[in-house]
Length: 177
Image 1 (spheres, rainbow, N blue to C red):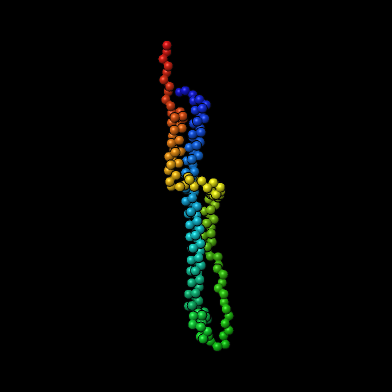
Image 2: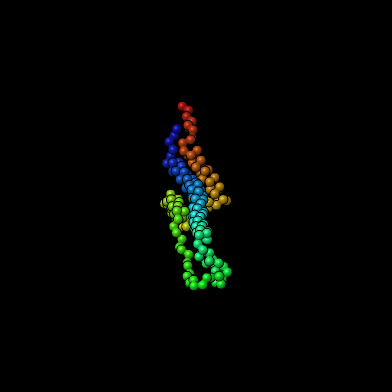
């Protein structure tokens, strides 16, 4: 097999690098954007779960108080039906609800969020900066341009490998004179 010329070697490497330069963002960016969307959805779900857990705790406290505390029932009745129900010689002391406590549920949700965000922080930060800095990077994700770019880069890679990558056959031998 004949040795390739410098020009053929240069063209091979240029085609190979150009093909991979287009192929890599087409493969990485959609997965990364989906990952970021899932993280945002997970954070929203964790926040909603923490809110619901706090509401459940408050409701359970109200149920417990209504079953065990007659003064609490009297306060509820006064709030609902007016101050005419109050007993004589009782001073009304306004009570503010207690601040939310740190429950195991909210701590577990925060731990889950932190753990997931720590998986790929360098890549996520790099890709966020890249998308913000280069808005045309969305071309690699758009459903109309992505298949064209994938076909173009695949064709470029196949062409480089088949035509210039050593798949050439033996050159015919020159007849002896």
